[in-house]
Every structure is written in structure tokens, then in C-alpha cells.
Amino acid sequence: MNDAALARARQSSQYCAPTAGEDTMIDDRDRKSSNWLSLVLRDVQFWVPVAVLAAGLLVLRWIS
Image (spheres, helix red, strand yellow):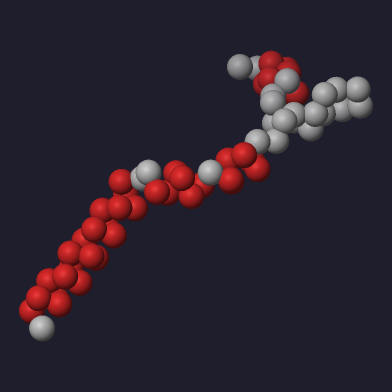
């Protein structure tokens, strides 16, 4: 890709700030941040350590 094509691609990128008269982009960070808890609770990588911790505590309680 030559320099002119690269410059055009950067100008038309969705990450460029809008100029006067252009519509602003919709910011969906608020929507994403509001459901982070549901993403964590549905994630297996969260529940596996929780289950291992609970099992370890049960084993320690059984031993003592």
C-alpha cells in the first residue's frame, strides 16, 4: 500500500474524530461496562478457581 492510500485509509477510519458537520460516533462503552458483571458470572475461568477454592476449604475443614 502506498503512502497516499494509507493516508486515505487512516482518514476514513472509524477511529478518526468527526469534523464539523459529520455525525459523531455512538459510544457504547457505557453499555459494555454495565454488563461486565454478567460476563464475569458466565465465565468459566472465574468459576473454576472459585470451585477449587471451595473444594480446598471443604477438604481443610474435613481434615481438621
